[in-house]
Image 1 (cartoon, rainbow, N blue to C red):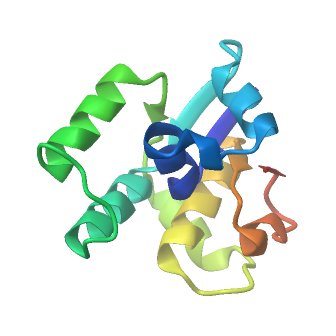
Image 2: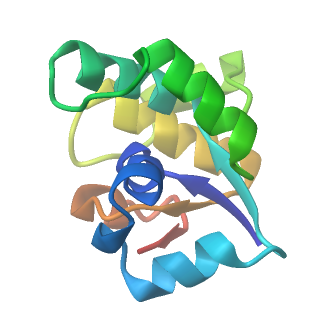
Length: 129
């Protein structure tokens, strides 16, 4: 299967793996699964670091580069079609990052792994939690 990790799932897998449900851990360690993150998740990670909500060393930029290099997670491409879809998708809230992440899953045929109940309620995207 092909999965898109929501930002918090990606960060938890690297920083706080005990926060992940056992079912999610199984999906993440299964070598038959392809795992992706949206570039928006990288942006969200930088915002969290800038606001002091997470600490990433030696710098947030270096931490992200190292995390991407060492993990099996691939970067999904951000396209104009995803940007358009992010405005068309029917989500119960208007968070732009969530809209881009949901649109990335939809446009790429990926199942979104998320603990976000609002994203799980979106009928247009497949989710796993």
